[in-house]
Length: 218
Length: 375
View 1: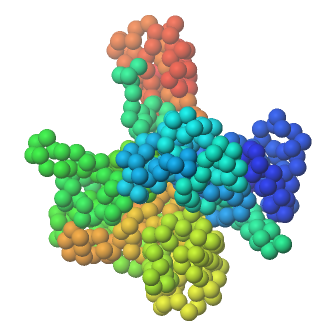
View 2: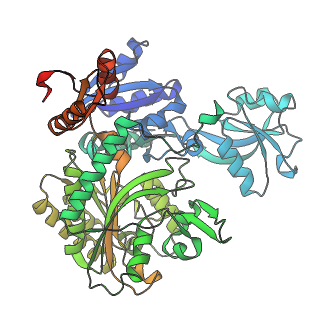
View 3: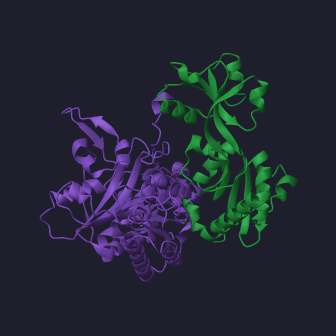
């Protein structure tokens, strides 16, 4: 198959962390940093054939892969749980680790309210988590600065990813309950796994080895 | 604006795509008929009470339900043809000698995606075949070949993925949560699989050409005999297809999801370039007919026509003739049109000053000027 293996990567910190893993897997992402305006980066990867890398918004990676515009991608399972795309997610890359949490002001227990108002970027995750507790939460979907919502009375609590907890602390918020652990995953289009099997499998196996090596390192 | 809205998950097919779809449907119909499958039409909607016997829990959740205004009973838009064909085969066609070879074409409706993956297409064009009363590899290969030949007439190279419904139950350690394991397997998440069912992780990586079967035999050497029977079965089907359809790339996938809960043995999915998911799915469903009448082994497949059409490369080639004439209704022109239709596939009469615009807008190949040599 001569078509290039197209890889979708998310902008930002994950891209830097993924760079290390991809380099170990034989795909050097350095040209991406050299030319930030370029949208499609053709790369040569030893033994994988031609590769094209697209740098996307984190929330766009799964749609690109699901619809086959990219054969593989890197995206956090926070986004996967929220978007529920129909893709394979065969490998935990172990980078971009954080936790999906319910958080809020220390004195306010959202689980004791009849209909807690929850501000979040993750409407589906939040709804499902409160539903599982038998609570019909009122979800307020925001696209940024979620921590602000409980401070100004917009919401009783928030559902968001928490890395160090520093932002929460600075705003006087606490974690009420973790929901699940988050890390970046390799995702693969179902058809690409069959139609570009050699390249997809090659990349998957090399990344698996790179992840294992990284985790063994002190 | 509001008067032109459509619900999510449905589309209008405009002339270009509609023609491509009609042609794909015709190609498949011809391939299925050549292979001996007789056409059958089933109702667009049926009683829930009857049809639900043939549906799994997931499919039941995805049903488009309606209350029949004529009788107050709960009806459903058909979510699938296989259950309907099973119902007919065990009742109205119960007396016909076996095996039965039946084909269908038409549309199915889903209120939501049966696998819970958000709202996808809800009005799906399908064509397919069912081979009823036939056990064994011969029947499975026959059905697969009917599908392969059908897709081949559209000029698309096919990659076929084979799996087996008995494999996972045979390998699953006692007490492991089946549903969670299936979900992890559907994503090929080896780490999650190993956490849920220790030792099962390798299953997520067992896909590819035939040597994966040997690898599986080695890794799961101590597994129950049912697991080895499933692997042997897959090996035989793959071997037979390699000879009967060498142009098809045959892959094994020992950790894939079944498209339907009713598959009991071999199941398969066909992929073509430029389609993001399978265009053909099928499998053996030996327990389904027994839910409607006498139990019988059966195997079948369905083709997703729109996905197939969307995978076809390029624009449709223009064809047909526009006759530029001042006398569109005259007997002479009407006769000339028939002759042009024979020669060009289609022809229409258009006033000369509008002929070129009409040709370009509607995908005709040529404009023919009216005149003495139009015949």
